[in-house]
Image (cartoon, rainbow, N blue to C red; front, side):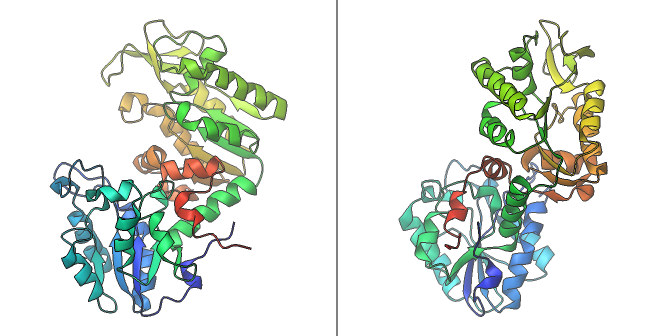
Length: 398
């Protein structure tokens, strides 16, 4: 798949609309607690500034229930952009109001306008073409640099691309990098290729597992989803999170792995607790001995060691999903051990966004990973082998 990229189109002196992903975490006082996604967009923004473009930035933030809901305003993002770029950021009062359209029209070279939260407008999530046409009317060129939402068919991601021909729309540097990385690692990995899949539910990663099992040499399954597999093997898992309706799927995946010669690893010991509570009484048990009234909330030390051995010869590691309830310190040790192991590896290491990206930041292993994706859901769909809606329109035809 060959993408149209920003570096290959003429943007000099033009008005450029850049769809970014500024959906960053904030505390109760509207202070940004992690600006990684904002910093990730800077390369594309600076590239446009250097080419005398006037720039319109657009992003969603959170899930506002009504237009203009103050706690979902992008004003804190405008302040952070001002600090990072060291220049004025014009903050629009709305998304497509007459005053905003006029400001966009009058932008001069090098000036930047940040639109308000796209989700203040109902047309955004509905992929409404009329709304998309108003967004498109602001610019000569459309750039998608929002990998984290490119799996969503929203107006600023998909519908808007219909108003630009292939010479006037492209992927920004971040989006292009993400797409290239995932396609290369899935289609041309250096072997052994080992995937670590965790998180709470099998249902969210069923297609991922079906696709990966045909491509990897080993697959390590942890987190809440592991209990569906353990129960499929006939183990007592107590009150651990289990998706009973997916037990046949778990059996099918294990059978498929066996047929393909893929080594599939499941936890051999568990940190179990009386309740889903940071203060609950907890203990180590083997995977076969989870008490009937207890629940598993982390992998145990023997599993962490087993996974460490399984990863020792890897040349490519793809990790998506924590090994336990890492938000609670008592149940974070398994995830921390795996994070440290992956970080210390000599392999190409790719972290698949979302909770896993947050986890490696908390453990201090961020700098030692080869690549950390900015999009959880989008990275999962790429691993599933899908073409993302926001990317499809940017693919060059042979």
